[in-house]
Image 1 (tube, rainbow, N blue to C red):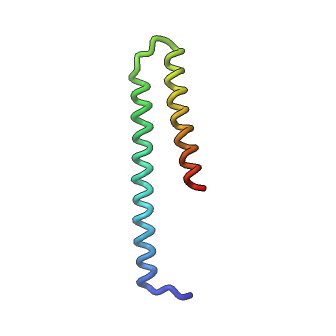
Image 2 (spheres, rainbow, N blue to C red; image 1 turned 30 degrees about the vertical axis):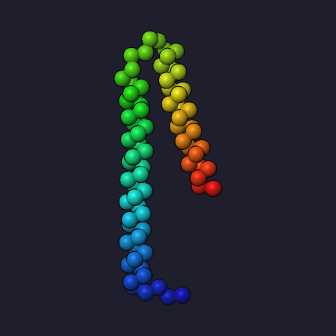
Length: 74
């Protein structure tokens, strides 16, 4: 099957749009988790235990998100 120049141009343009969209999504995700970490950093925990608890919550949120994303890929 031969692909015409117009089809190749369309495919390249579509691929570029998809790559840009993926980068934008990645930026959004990284920004969200960075904001969560900054919130954690700015906390004034009463001790190590409360800081560890908040870190475990954040880790759990990340784990749940990864599990959901992996499920969506299947």
